[in-house]
View 1 (cartoon, rainbow, N blue to C red):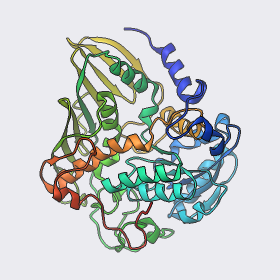
View 2 (cartoon, rainbow, N blue to C red):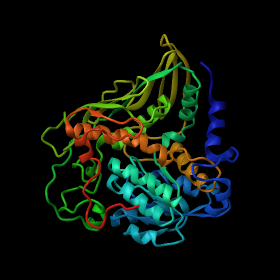
View 3 (cartoon, rainbow, N blue to C red):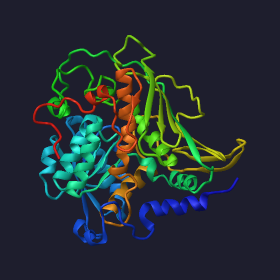
View 4 (cartoon, rainbow, N blue to C red):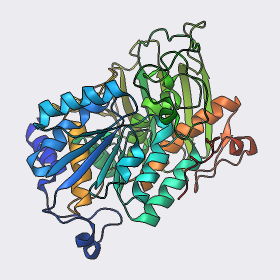
Amino acid sequence: MESTNTRREFIKKTALGAAGLTLGLGVSASSYSRIIGANDRLNVAIVGLGRRLGAFPEPIKLESSNARLLYLCDVMQSQRERAARNFAHHLGYQPKQENDYRKVLEDNDVDVIINAMPDHWHAPGAIMGVKAGKHVFVEKPGSHNPRENELLVEARSKYGKLIQLGNQQRSAPESIEIVGRIHAGEIGEPYEAVTFYANARGRVVNQAPAPVPEGLDWDLFQGPAPRREYTHNTWDYYWHWYGWDYGTAEIGNNGIHEMDIARWALNVDYPEKVSVNAAKRHFLDDGWTMYDTMHAAFHFPGNKTIVWDSKSRNGYSTYGSGRGTIIYGTEGSVYVDRDGFKLFDRSGRLQEESISDAGEGGVALGGGGDMSTMHVVNFFNAIRGKEALNSPIEEMVKSIQLCHLANISYRLKKDLTVNSRTGKSTDPDAIKLWSREYEPGWEPVV
């Protein structure tokens, strides 16, 4: 097996901006000076201070980033205070604390929004950000429904600000390398990708009316979602599993990462057909209201397929690890995850292995590691016109759409037919779920 340390270090340096000037989507040389000068400081606000918070101190404090954190914004007081202590330790100064995202947007000194709010806030918050003249890094999945995908692309085009999706594996040197080699014919013609996720999540508290926790602005937490009474522990991660008001289920929570790698490797856009078998299999009497187990198949033009095999509450590692992607080609196969990749010939013999030292999390809650740092640095460099965005929203909505199509298929309990050019389902029942009900006055408007 070939040693790849030298090559990996070179690619990592390239991902961190050591390579020459390349212009990102929508960033021409003529507009470069109108965006933000290469030597100017980027003033950053982080909105949503939950479990992804650990991904952001390192890229902000890097001297090469020339960034300053102006705001830490969250609807929960304890989150703001904890984040302030954390960042003061890392940065040596105290950013401002703010409860209301809208007040952050009013500050003309803010150049960049990092949107790490819950899923129902992703697209509305990103659209509000670019309308206010900010560049936006939005965490995955990036939107709550297919219509929000369309609005994100419209907003990006109309306001000319960059939107990067927080699927950090797009910036992993090993993933960039092996996908490039797949595209160059390393395993022949790639025809199928199996994506997977296995975790042993436990019981979820049954929802019951409860007092709003001290320090929580429940109205702002709900934001674009229709108003309802507070139920125990909804704000603290459990919103993922309490119906469709806030979350996008496991496929939106985690599947977006692996399915994006699969779609990238297979070089496909939208599927023709989506088939789903999903159900709640564990702790049938607990508060988890969605499926916790899903097998989804996406059939693309050219007889290519992506499979999503997800077990949220059964930790058995069917494929040898908790998450990853296997790409099958006519002349070989590739196993790729956050730890690197393994390349096999057609007989199944291991030909090459590249191991990452990025230290990025797998199925554990939280965030942070070199992969996340490189992804945020790529975003900063793209704002300055030095690099192309690794996850521009115009391309990423194709991957996000797979999550929404699978969820709609599950909710309708039937297969979906899809226009492979537009990503829109031809099923009238699916169109009824294409958007969502918004709280009056909170509808996302481009």
